[in-house]
Image 1: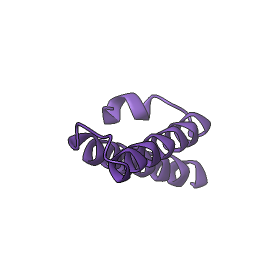
Image 2: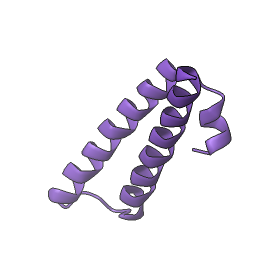
Image 3: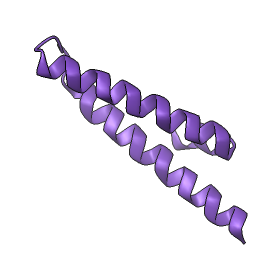
Length: 66
């Protein structure tokens, strides 16, 4: 997901997005553990998406605190 798409969401939307991404990442980790994961690059992509979403969320919270 692009940062511009994340910035257009509000704080509640970002928190939901982070939760969804964490669940997706957990599912991918379980697939890897049971050797069902075929595309291992998805793990890195979801991890980076989580980091992006958390970064934008922190920025929005900081702006709201001012």
